[in-house]
Image (spheres, helix red, strand yellow):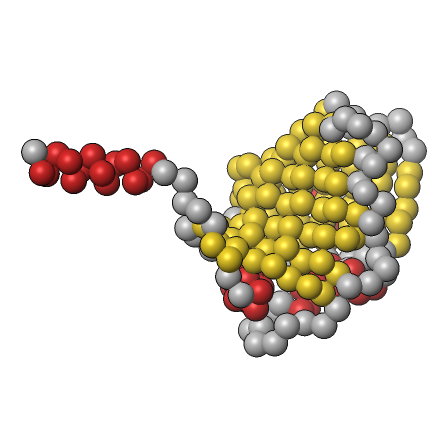
Length: 200
C-alpha cells in the first residue's frame, strides 16, 4: 500500500506544471548565449499572432522562418495574409501578397549584428543600453530584453530550451504593435546559404 501511494505521488507530481522561477538577469543572458553558441542557422514553422495598435482584434498567421548568424532573418507568411520579410542586420524589407514593398531602417544598436556581438563571448557584466529580466522553468528559459533608447522595439521576449531550440518570440513595439511567434519543427545547423534569404 505504501509503495502504491508513493508511486501515485510520483505520477501526480510529474504531471504538475513546473513553476517558473526568477533567475538573475546576467544568468539569463549567459544561458541565452550558451544555448545558441553552437547554432549557426535554423528553420522552423511558426504561428504568429499579430495585434496592431490601431485594431482591436488579433490576426493569426501561419508561415516559416529562417535564420543565419550573424545578421539574417527571413519570414514568409503563407496565410491568411501572404507576405515575405527579410531582416538584414538593421534593415527590414517586406513584400506583401499584392506586391507592395516596405523598407524600414532600425537604429544600428538594434541590428542583429549588434545583438549577437553582445552575446558572442561569456557575459560577465550587464551590457549597457538594455534592461533584462529572466526566469527558468525546468530546461526552458525566458529572457526579456528592453532596449533603453528611442528605437522601434520596446521589448523582446525569447523563450528557448537549453539545447538552443527556440520556442517563442514576442516583439513589442513602441507604437503598441505586438507580435507573438510560436515555433514548431525547428531544424538547426542545416547550412543555409545566401539564396535562402532572398525576397524575390
